Image 1 (cartoon, rainbow, N blue to C red):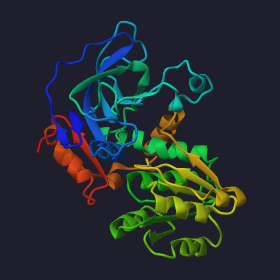
Image 2 (image 1 turned 90 degrees about the vertical axis):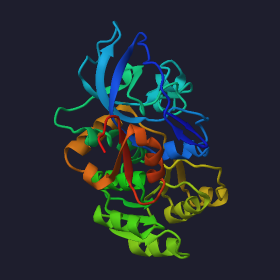
Image 3 (image 1 turned 120 degrees about the vertical axis):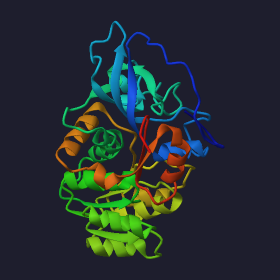
Image 4 (image 1 turned 90 degrees about the horizontal axis):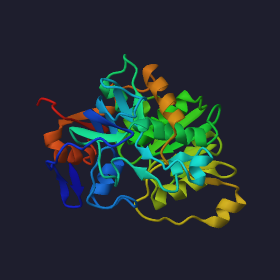
Length: 337
């Protein structure tokens, strides 16, 4: 499948040939991510068009190169789509998610998971527990981003947390913060149905993101400033709100992918000692933590997967994903309609 700014189209190509170190994987389910829809609209800052989408992918290994021992034929797997070089300063110092030569499967890479079969370096595959369903496994990659953000913030145990944006990532941040022991959680979003979902998932309070006194209202709800604010929208208004909510001495974690630059009031950042921190993707340990969370029931596809489409209806899946009426949309080759 190929995504262009004019839309999404299925293309027929030859099955990719295995290269050394690779596995051939047959896709069972793949999620449509917000970065997928942003990229297809020409709004992703780091994904040029056209591109081959699909990085939230689950499948089964159908073949491996002769030098591969990490996985075997028949293994059920999910892809950790970051493809680091392993040699640069970031990789050598345990920060391979921000590799200086990073490639990203399904986001500007030569292949993506929205295909019947694909090849990928076998070292980027995680075996799945036998008891984990494919739909559960489809949430590992998107959950790993919030898990990483919570860890990068230094944890949230006994802290007050605000989540700006109640889309898939925002709600997964909420669940990760709850799992991490946050003392109080508040979620904001302009859409009432998303605020209702946040309440149903245990948010302590929800607020309309467009109300003019939002910062004052949330601070009054918390009884203090926020210890950590997770901005899952990353537009000018939410960054402004986040800095004010976190002052003084709080942390703003930028989790959502900005579609354009924003400005920051640097005097406030410095004088109020607010830490503004970008959070990029995940590490293998975040995948491990996400698998544990899902298997223990903290995150369920019943709460997140609201639309399922066959591969032949990929364009409809993308349209559904941006409609506002769905949370997580998935695509499955061979899914009967």
